[in-house]
Length: 331
Image 1: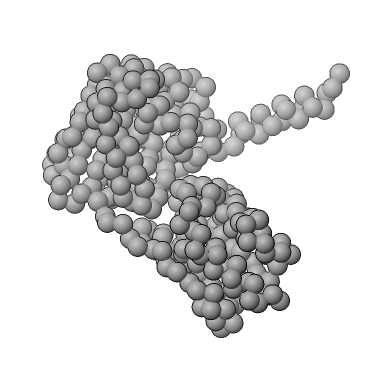
Image 2: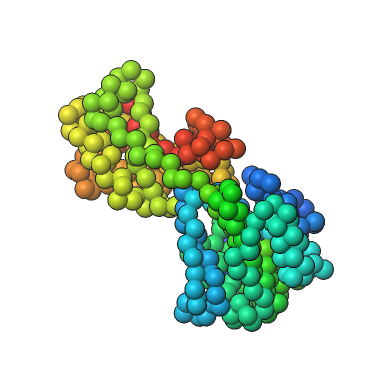
């Protein structure tokens, strides 16, 4: 018998079950999570999914959702906060939505669209439209990803907007019957997206090769905000090309210089996740410089420090935007 592999598998499963993310029930919000400003939560609710992003787009339904598409939808853009709440099961999706509806109306929001049960479309179609596999949060690993795995047909949706502030709120609530995770079983799961009505901040700060050289000479480092990545990803966006080309220009003009390429993130999400993301982003920059621009790999070393070297307040979007950056540090 192959006892060793079997024992390793058993120990791995036990380890997962013993970790905080797989505890039998929630006793507190996920680390680093908090309610959006000026928006209360349902009594007894706990946050098990959380993400804040910079300028982003959110597609929401404004008509019945089918398995292929929604009858109609709208896209909102701006800084976004996404949360998942687990609400005690004695509070139905209807009660949850009606409470939010009353709070939002008092705060000056107007309802743009709402639906309930099959008027929203099949529950599996609606939940996957709003929480697709590609958009699942990673806050508590598989527990967070499992939201809306087997929701009951008792679903409710509300889309509201404050014309004065431009803030949009999307709320989806459904009763979870998937029993694999006790944290979610027989609870009302609430997905909340808040899109702030702020204009796009122009952050494409271009740093020339000469400026890189001067900064590295003076302080041993240079921050590059023109190196951009897809949200929650290590994929470089096309907007990064001018900065990458300028980095290669600087390195070509200084063939003896070696640098660390350092990835930085904000505090949104877990520590381990941000450390890994920052390392992957730094590695993507190194790969682009060596693969596309021909810089020798021996001159570059990728390093990720996650949220450990902030230059702004992580409590504000402007501060978080300053913290999300790539730096060149002289070796």
